Length: 258
Ligand SMILES: Nc1ncnc2c1ncn2[C@@H]1O[C@H](COP(=O)(O)OP(=O)(O)OP(=O)(O)O)[C@@H](O)[C@H]1O
Ligand SMILES: [Mg+2]
Image (cartoon, rainbow, N blue to C red; front, side):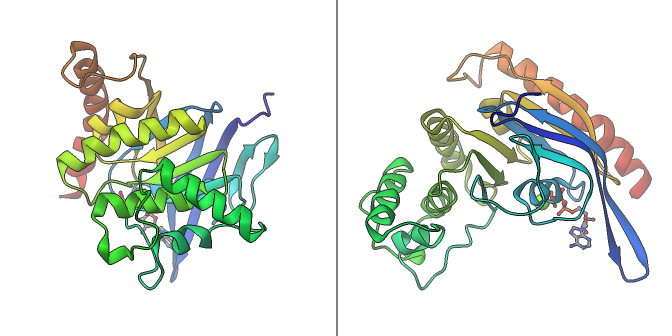
């Protein structure tokens, strides 16, 4: 078995108890991710995407199955994994640099200063160290959240619809930025998105999930050279393939729920 940075999710199932009943959220979910891969997850709202990320980041220590990272079963959070949520979750009363420094654990003040500065530069926020969140645009706030998640130099960055609140042009710009950061940091990225084009632009492979309970429906590889041309025939073909797979279960879902 490869242990170096590889993530193996094996037969993971999760049920939540809600009052007197159980909600079956993840069912026998298995997936392997190579170190340095960019993987996107798409699926209907409520199919368990965020729950899956919460398991990987270690916020759901009790689950059936195994999530093996670097050869060990995950059962809690660790500095080797960082997460960015859809809303940036920056503290409004702290400056950008203080928000980013907050994520740093066990470093001297000098080291902290260096790491914060280099990560703000990495995400293109040099010059905004002393700004407060309300002085930033949506894209800048998400960059700050990415810097905060990367400052501990994790091996895996989890992104839960990180660009969902941004306008279309800013999103396209942020796609290039996320690709650049991924290439510079050489880490694994796992992104949940509702935007199939975004998934095709960024990913090495796309995971389509089906709903209720959340299962792995299909893994679609994206063997296109980077940077990708959204208008190219190859790009459009992969996008169509993902949409087709997505619609398969979506139509079934709506046929029985409306
Ligand atoms: N702590 C919890 N307790 C009970 N049920 C939960 C809990 N967390 C999630 N769920 C349920 O699990 C299901 C999946 O939720 P999850 O947030 O993972 O979906 P999602 O795929 O991320 O959806 P979206 O695309 O809307 O963000 C939902 O039905 C939700 O109500
Ligand atoms: Mg979610």
